[in-house]
Length: 282
Image (cartoon, rainbow, N blue to C red):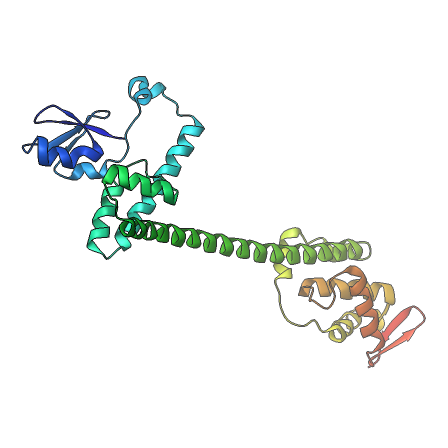
């Protein structure tokens, strides 16, 4: 607990005894100095000074290194005191508010109900069971509210993480299909696939809308000699066009793409299939 030196009488006073010192021992006291850090506190400003540097930190100076255990315990206690202050702000009852303010002046407030009530009895001289119960309810209510907020934030974070993971999984799957099509088409039409870098593929994958297979088949055949191509070459070029458009959800693997092409080719009335060749009918 923080201790002060009275600048009027020179006595050392613990923080929880300051009020008593003001009222019964030294009515002329107006300034208190912290024993550890030497900072002066005028009037009631000492109430904000809840913790200070340790003796080791004071005498070792810049050579001092706090252990993780010390930091963890100190941070945990600071968080606990913060809950007392939160409870104080939310309480309307003037009596309870005043008592909670006195509790917040201590740096060693217990975190269990029974110990908390014993602490109030011994340090604050509060013996009324109803008042003790109200103090704990006000304090624990703020703690539960804070805990609920943290849980909701954690839940929202998990929800967003799952959503992002699902989206990334879909993008990876689509990118894999695109790569398979590029590798497949590169064997037959390398001049058309040289420009399909990873960067271009990612841009193309973002396109939306339905891919028109019959229109693509017709376009490829019109650009060929005599409006005719082998089924194998036609398939490769149409799949390349499918990739440039952006793979839709109906065909997400190379096998599904081939199957979709074969199905669309057989149902297209403007072409004639003879053995291994396909010819556009004018």
